[in-house]
Length: 218
Image (tube, rainbow, N blue to C red):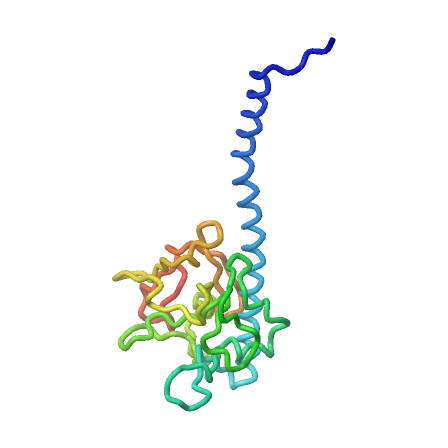
């Protein structure tokens, strides 16, 4: 007669399977996030190129972060953002969404008057306050001192812009919001020259006062 497995043997096999699962599952999760990171990076690159196409059509002027379309004097549901301005230059609306960020409320659907709608990326408006570095929105391409080091778009928590409230100290603009470490302890950024890059948050440095924007690469 064949002997069955003893209880000890079964427990050993289960323990081995549990150990292997504990080792492999984080690896699989990281690989899956890496794929999402690459997809997100591609989205931001396409948005950066769309902004350049927009600039070519509007006397080499970059889009504003938002516009008061209805003339009310403030931003409200009748107004628009850069998303609506760039939508005609993009293949589909999904390009505006990070695959690692689920947007569930007031989702951007491609409309031109999209103020208050949520998506996956924001425009750099850091240090817009008086006496600070000048953000790139609405500026002519010729005003950008180094387009390869000036960030135009970042990831976001849903809002259409990224500013001081997302993390700042006395010297360096270091974002502390969830999106800054969304992809394997870093985030994706689109630059004005059209390229996009993954960076850790501590790589953003506004030390030079000569730049157009506060968000630069060390």
